[in-house]
Length: 171
Image (cartoon, rainbow, N blue to C red; front, side):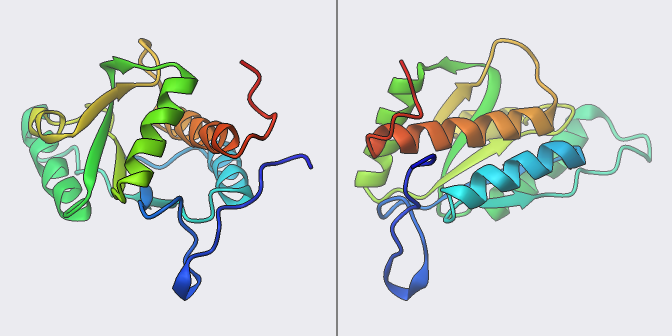
C-alpha cells in the first residue's frame, strides 16, 4: 500500500478525522501547480479536509496595512465561528512532526473542530493571533502563502500516516 488508508467515513457520508473536523482558511490563491499538489494530497487521504479560500481585501483606496488586516480578520472570524483557530505564523510555536501528530490526535479525540488559518501577504491581524487557540510556525522563514498551504497539508497527511501506523513517515 503506497498511501495510508483514507479517513473513515462517518454517519451521513462525511469523512472526518475522529470527531474533530479540520479546514484550512487561506487568504490568497495558490499558484496552480501548488494547488494541484494540495488537491492530490487532500484527495488521497484527507477527504474530510476542507480548503477555504477567502478573497484578500482590496489593496486600493489608500487603506493602511492595519485596515486591510482588520477587514481580513473579520472574514476569518466569520468563517471560523465556533471552531478552534490555529494561526500559522513564522513566530509561532515550532513542533516536530511527531508532536504535531500528537496535538492533532488530542484535538481529534476531544472532538474539536479546527481551522488552520494562513494570512494574506500582510500576515494575520494581531487579534486573530491573540484569539487563536494555538499559533504554529511551519518554518522560521517567511513562506509564500501557497507553499505554506501545501506544506501544512503535507504535514496533516504525515500526521495521519503516523496515527495509522503507515510507514510514510520515517523518523
